[in-house]
Image 1: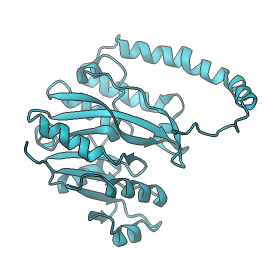
Image 2: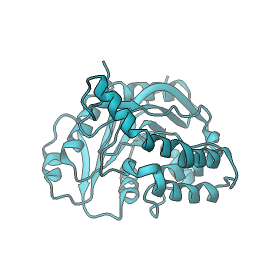
Image 3: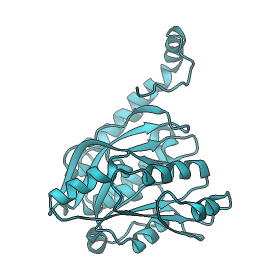
Image 4: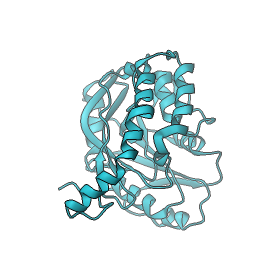
Length: 274
């Protein structure tokens, strides 16, 4: 079994405490043969001082203005030397076993090019909120159904960047989704039912988009651009979510708040993993 190396790219953001948690989650990996590249956009909140003094694991980092998240990640990919690459936004975290399990799967299957797993959602303070929806086991289902690939739990061969290019820097929300659509019909991919990452949901993050309205507009453009049909299960799912599920969720808010009170749980407290 050949030994592979992993390059992890982290685009920074102006929440220094979250970046520090992200760095710790990477530095505490059970397997150590990886490089961590941090691309900061010229922060003035103490991020540069944090990066300069970091000693838990070697970092490659730069701090300079960029043209957005996709541009920052692309700069990191250009610096990457590992055979396998991934990006981990500074809001998000890896599990301690993530690098070990991911490289094990790639090393056990020489032809494997793309791997994705499970994720859990955490709140701004890092507490468990819920298990993220399980991705579909076939990557080509992206062209029919809702795109539940969780970006922090996605890893792929660096050679795909040479074959398919870098992220589309014109996109704000769907930069990862567009890339999966671009390569999905042409790679050997596998889904592993293992928790590989934690997605942070906070009020000012992209995930906080109510009803995913802005997300969906950009996603739909990418979906149609890459051969998606105007009438498909994905669009039907979206219609049901917008017309039935989301309004029902909002209308039942008072009832759910009352149930929390009856269960003697303070409203807003997350249900934590034990």
